[in-house]
Amino acid sequence: MNPRSVPPRTNPVRRLLDNAAEAWNMPARGVVEIWVAPFLIALCGAATAFGGKDLYKWFTGEDGFAETMQVVFYALALMFCLFVVNALWRSGRRGVAMLYVVVAAGLVFMLGEELSWGQRIWGWETPESMRQINKQEETNLHNIYGVGSTFKWLQLLVGAYGTLLPLAVWKLGALRRYRDFLSRVVPHYSLIPYFVMLFVWRVYRNFFDAPRDFYFVVSEYNEVLELVLAMGFFLFMVYQLRSLQNEARAQVSHELMQRISAQDDAEITRKAS
Image (cartoon, rainbow, N blue to C red; front, side, top):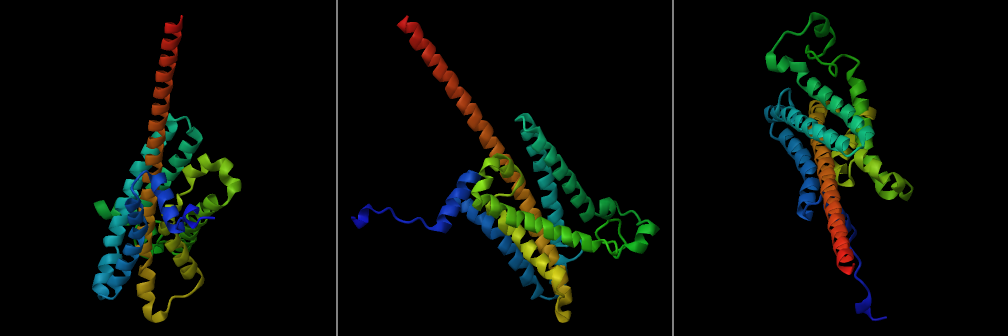
């Protein structure tokens, strides 16, 4: 066989990149930026730890950069989630739309917890009953003694969901019959970096003790990865909205072509008669 007649092998990474770019309906460069962003944030968070305690606390501390940006991205994710609910409802997929209503409620809960349900904005006093059981003396659930560990396991489950299920959907051919439904409820594989970091981190933190000399650095680094997760939720909603908008445009184009074809057939029939 002539070597020139053998088609060149496609680089697996390039193939993944091209498939992701097609799914996002954007240039491959945009997908690369999506992939790189969480690692840059993780590195920036780690770098501030070497810049001294004050810089690290500015990045990871209470109402610091990481927590503020979490609120921003959760708020954006909530807004886009409502757009997705509307698009799904109008397309007739009302069961999936209701699932997104549940997601929207979860995002409201996350925002409320991050803002201590408005206490940090309006500055009202923490009720005495809450002050006694909350380690930060604020009005939220995730800082209540004994409850915080539950949130840590929930983070592990969310990280596993966004890491393992996209791989299963991508690799298991048996799931293709449910492709439309799964594409709406499982993140695209291009978003795995936003979930896998928290998943690995939670496995480490939930099952192993942090070194005593670096306990503060390790414990506060979770805020950096929560920021990455918040970005992942936002991008998941952006992906879903773009996908639904592209689907709607394709449907309109298909209906228009069918109408034009029917008009052409009618014209041909009229002339023939």
